[in-house]
Image (cartoon, rainbow, N blue to C red; front, top):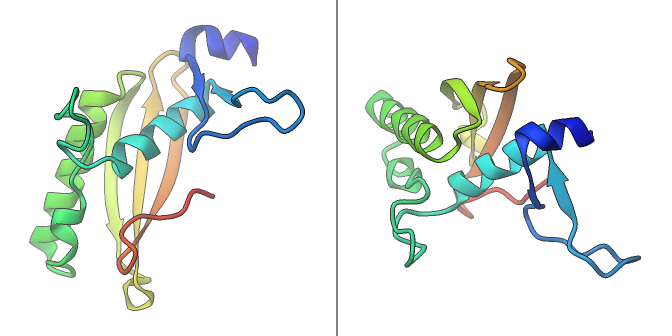
Amino acid sequence: MADAAMFLGKGFSFPPKVDATTGRFVMSEGEEDIKEAIYLILKTRLKERPMCPDFGCNIENYVFDMPDRRAERGMEDAITTALAGWEPRIDNIQVTINKERISDGIILIEIGYTVRKNNNAVNLVFPYYLEEGFSTWR
């Protein structure tokens, strides 16, 4: 995994955790770091960070218009734009809104992308809970 960290990066895990044994922050690296960065981008609302107001993605703006196809398309475009702008380690971003579980209050956001440095294709499912807003991590 050390080689992956060299060209894919290493950072604090998301959400932040402390190792009970060492007392240090847990780090993530490689493709796991990219996945966690994607979750962080999607969970951050625009203007939420005072020093970086353009960071994030306002996907919640579209939720109340569901299940309208126009709202789905807007959500897909917002996610694609945010990931293309804030996650430089990925390419070929494809986003699909899956409403199969909307009656349960869940929209599944299916994200496909290619890791630039090693050309690995990755699929990620981000659950968006309509009642609570965002998913709980893991």
